[in-house]
Amino acid sequence: MITIVGAGPAGSYAAYLLAKKGKNVRVLEEHKTIGEPVQCTGIVTKDILRYLNPWKGVIINKTQKVLFVAGRKRLILSNENLIINRTAFDKQIATMAKRAGATYSLSTKVKEIFKENQNFTVITNKGLSKSKWIIGADGPLSLTARQLDLYKNQQFFKTKQVLADFKNDNVIEFHLLKKGFAWIVPESKSNARIGVATMSFPSVEFNDFTNNLKIEKVHMTNGGLIPIFHPAGFRQKGLAFLIGDAGGFVKQTTGGGIVQALESARIASQSILHGPRYFLLWNLLLTPGLLLHKLVYKIMHSKNNEELLKLLNQKRVKKILSNVSRDNLVVMAIQLAFAEPRLFKFLI
Ligand SMILES: Cc1cc2nc3c(=O)[nH]c(=O)nc-3n(C[C@H](O)[C@H](O)[C@H](O)COP(=O)(O)OP(=O)(O)OC[C@H]3O[C@@H](n4cnc5c(N)ncnc54)[C@H](O)[C@@H]3O)c2cc1C
Image 1 (cartoon, rainbow, N blue to C red):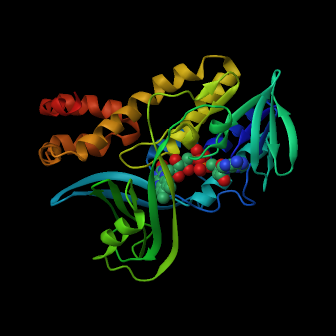
Image 2: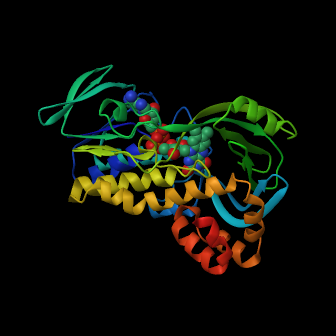
């Protein structure tokens, strides 16, 4: 038996991959409805297609341009992004997992997990059960991590976001803030998801950011925590694994973690099925890119960022920024360093 805590993208994708290979998988989710409440903006790169084909209704918009604003500097990139409906997306992956044979127990909150002999004992609001394997896919405040003494001392961005009527040109806007960033992500030309992620006070930053925006009617306000990746720390102990936000696999530059949630689910599942150690796979396939995002975040928030933006604003550099996915930052960094060697100094 493999027990997965959490039915977000990470948990359900792992459930799908493992059930498809004949494993006995059950997913425990505290909420009564998968994909709700939404605490996400839902921008993804086309890298998502490496994992699954979104069903009809999952992709609600596509944008071709991103405007990056840092103080008085502006950089416009041609860059395709998909805007997804997170509830529909989470439901799609859960349906795929169920069809492959995984069972789901909703309204089931895991309260305690401990190892006893060869098995984990899992205590929920509905009772007690045993499991040989545990996958913690329970988001930024992972109870699995705390109970099993895994990945610790997590730091977070705090966020505030609204869905509002807001006229726009179908361009994603990304603004650098002193201690984080802000975004405008169009759902259509008449409404957008507008929010901030900050290490300071999200409501204050949100008010500052939106002060001069012509927001019409606000339909929904939400927020949540975004983990800040750090390379140290264990995401595996014996037959217990942490994936997705529970393992802190999020890009610090943008707060995006959906693609990384799917990738960590994929490599954890591979480790369960075929034996190579999860530790090696996440350090090989996820850590380098996420470390680079950490470095870029630091540079963008340093005093040097004006010089960097000037270098990035050149035609040949913009072409790379436009064509290579930010989910493939290692490749992007290598191409950039060759196209504009002066960028090297920012990387070391
Ligand atoms: C405001 C905001 C905007 C974001 N925007 C983007 C974006 O545009 N693009 C992007 O790629 N990423 C974005 N992210 C990050 C993205 O939402 C996460 O990286 C992604 O959801 C991680 O998926 P996950 O499955 O690991 O965790 P989650 O989606 O958090 O799922 C965890 C699940 O576990 C359940 N759970 C938790 N504890 C328990 C328990 N004890 N028992 C049972 N169930 C439990 C939760 O209810 C939840 O359903 C954003 C995050 C925030 C907060």
